[in-house]
Amino acid sequence: MTTDDLMEILNTARLNNVCIGVSGMLLYTGSEFIQILEGEEEVVEELLDSIKKDPRHRDFRIIEKKKIYKRDYAEWTMGFKRIGKDELRDVPGLNKFFDTDLGGSIDKNKLDLINNLLNHFRNEGKKKNIHDELSLDQEDKFIYFLHSAIRFGVKALALLMMLTVLWCVLDVVVVIYEEILSRPITELGKSEILHVFGSFMIVLIAVEIFINITLYIRNDVIPVKMVVATALMAVARKIIVFDFHDVSAMHVIGTGILVIALGGCYWLLEREFKVHSDT
Image (spheres, helix red, strand yellow):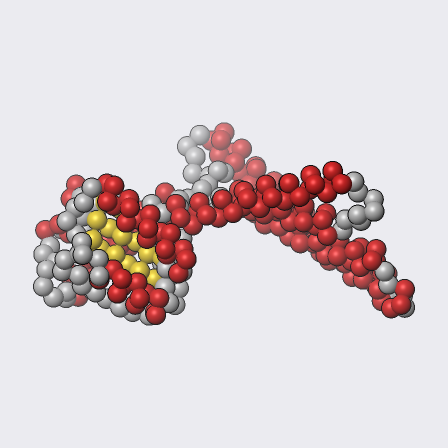
């Protein structure tokens, strides 16, 4: 198959799998495909039926079916790797893969070999996706010291932010008492309710900021989505507590444009990570 053929298959599979909640990996040896699919049983069965009907297939076989309790390829709508003999030459347990005849019945040895192959490229793909801006794996001792110091600072900020969250929760309790519980229900107005809503939103924003802080010392997450989500929540909080008697029309229009921009940015990030984050 040509590169264009492969990319057409991959793009279609990735977009379709996002919609039906399927994850997995596809390996191509130059003459054979090896694929693993994860998802709800009925969904996977329907997808298999669709794949079987593809006239480009010959000798289609289901090697193994099993129930799983968690996904091994959850971050990939359809991971892909084109593999060659040279690539596996120095990999223990896999250097004989291209010398093994996968025709006929699949015994335990062949099944183990195929599973080892899938696991190998799954692990290789995960290593490539590691995002570690403050890595302690540094040969330069000065850079190691700086990264260590920054990590300590981030942990201190996380601790202070946790205390801030608890303080905000206490403030919510005080606001509820002062604005609602200490007054007759007939005296409750819009301003009191908005005050309570605003206090709740401050707690949620504080929690999001805490998560943002901790992301900097993790290596499995790119923090840009969380930053955009936090900004969107902060703007949403302002909208909820707007007093439209005090704000101008241009202020409302500008806020609306900002919400659309942030919402569109988050949607694009979500779409990009779901469809194109595969190897």
